[in-house]
Structure formats: C-alpha cells, structure tokens
Amino acid sequence: MYKKFIRLRAFEDQPSYPNSKPKVCVTCGIKASQEALFDVGEGIILIEKYCDTCVKNTSN
Ligand SMILES: [Zn+2]
Picture 1 (cartoon, rainbow, N blue to C red):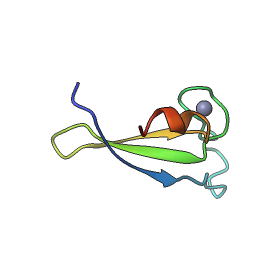
Picture 2 (cartoon, rainbow, N blue to C red):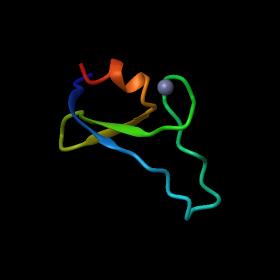
Picture 3 (spheres, rainbow, N blue to C red):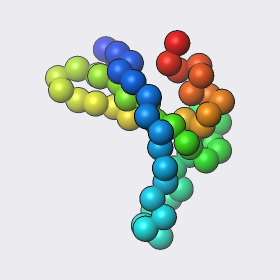
Picture 4 (cartoon, protein in one colour):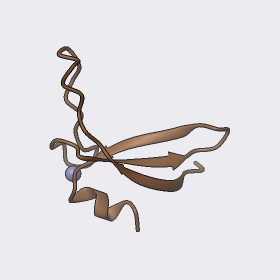
C-alpha cells in the first residue's frame, strides 16, 4: 500500500469528550503524545498515534 510519511505533530488528548477512549500508541498501547501523518494516496491522510519512544522508529 502506498504510504508516504509527511510529518509529526504533537498530540494532546482532548479531555472534553468523556466517553471517548483514551488515545494510545498504536505500537505499545501507552498514552499517545505524538501523531504521525501519512499520505496514503487519493488525497487521504492517515494519522497514527505514537508515544515519544515509538515515534522515533517512525519518522526516520
Ligand atoms: Zn509506544
């Protein structure tokens, strides 16, 4: 699948949604603090959440 890394941005969970699940790192499952944006083609942007540790393996 076409998936091109675009950039990282800081992610802060929004506490204003009490029923929403806490956003966690897709790799290790702890609280996410960064999100990585990927271009997956056809104008679609995929966003994956990561913690500070796992994000280092994503953006290289
Ligand atoms: Zn992680």
